[in-house]
Image (cartoon, rainbow, N blue to C red; front, side):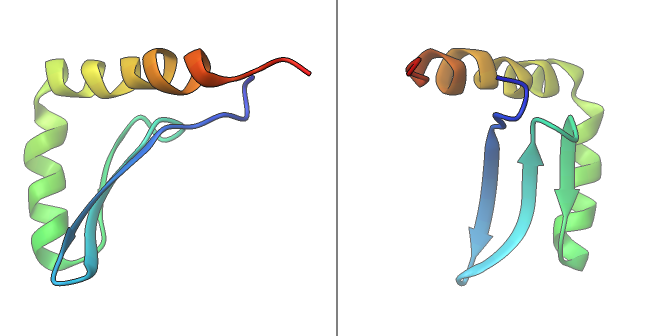
Length: 66
């Protein structure tokens, strides 16, 4: 179960500008605007904690054992 990850991506004009990856544990920007936005989002510790909790709430809850 350690290899399961939660990814949340933000797009504008079909271009991904920021992403949250539960393995990284923070937002990462892919454009100049995305980098600035990711820095703002990463300062909000409650938002980071909520995004990390999504891995357990959404991903691990939907895994079936074979």
